[in-house]
Amino acid sequence: MKPAPFDYARARSVEHAVELLGREGARLLAGGQSLIATLNMRLSHPSLLVDINEVAGLDRLARRNGHIEICALVRLAQAERSAELVQAAPLIARALPHIGHPAIRNRGTIGGSIAFADPAAELPACLLALDGEVEIAGPAGKRTVKADDFFQGLFETALGPRDVLIAIRLPAATHDTRVGFAELARRHGDYAMVGLAAAARANGTKLTDVRLVFFGVGSTPVRARDAEAALAAGDLEAGVKALARNLDPPDDVQATGAVKKHLAGVLLRRVARQLTEAPQ
Amino acid sequence: MTAHEITLTVNGEEVREAVEPRTTLVDFLRDTLGLTGSHVGCEHGVCGACSVRLDGAVVRGCLTLAVQCDGHKVETIEGASDSGAIADLQEAFRTRNALQCGYCTPAMLLTAAELLAGGGVPSRAAIREHLSGNYCRCTGYHAIIDAVEAVARVRAGATS
Image (cartoon, rainbow over all chains, first blue to last red; front, side, top):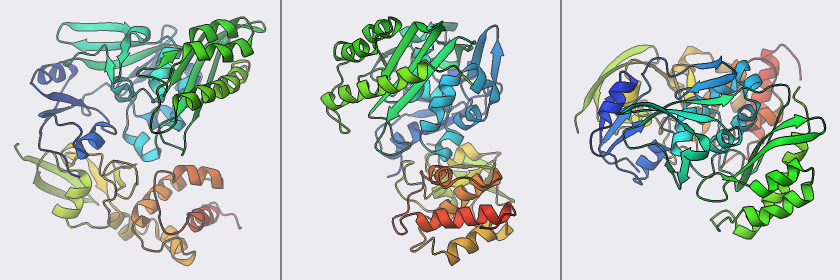
């Protein structure tokens, strides 16, 4: 199908984008790999698209003060090719190849994936697992929101209608950082039936600060806190059992909630193994 | 909804046209410029038939708006084919029956060319993965993988 008519404006700067978003029915356009599909299917009908693709400086990826900052317009493929990212954010590097297909990753952006907040998407779960934060520019200026507070509901985030996500910030990996990632999808590139992004810190043979974030199991990425505690205590079996309490996935077109719960346990076993491996 | 005047380079030639914002890049190429080698399939980014190059990177022509291409460079299968840059790939597709109806072929060629531009001989698994976003309903893919692999070997100077 073809999109319903809308107006189009190119933002010259972040401030200009915020100003343009003041118009009723305006929506931000970044990589467009989800938004334009919904336009084509007439699932959304904005009156104005505010295109930030030409805003200078939003395609940077840099290490700074123990963090890695990834600006909103960094393309997924660009991130995939970044040696800096592999080193500072190995969890993101593991997740990226699972997102869509090469042509989608050539255009899709890091910021778009986080801002769209599809509950079955990989990057929101990674951001939460890494205890990252989101930098936002809005009518009242800039602010920073922790990942724990950012994802609020189904496609619902801390972003207001006139806000622009300008970057995400993640603690850069250190020698004791451990990460794990796995997902189960019917076909490569599809959204996952269930996925798991995990991060922890190695302390001798033990793990501390375990964060297990499942996706495709609810309206937001979901932390499995009892399972995290069990893994920190070195008890994987207890962790798998705890998922019954921590997760309550609804049935969807891909699988029933019961199947998803079972698959979450399968993923936890796989990822727990990855968490014990030191990075190469 | 106002039409926007856009100026872009398509297959090396400068093009100036007025477009409605809602016109996708692939519809613009086909309907306005008559470049019908890029095909419209699912129109939501799944089938890959509309793939074209935007500033050198292969993108979905149905998930990019023509108006966004103002000031940018687009290359379609017509340009890639006329330049001779993928002649070996086209020949390998033909000799190995890597196409039947041909609907997916232009996009398949551009996507494969992008993988091969990285150099070396990718594994069959890597070729499959790189082409996983391009659907073919005729060949069952094996002949396509064969063709891409064969070209990679020839280009790398190896013999199979």
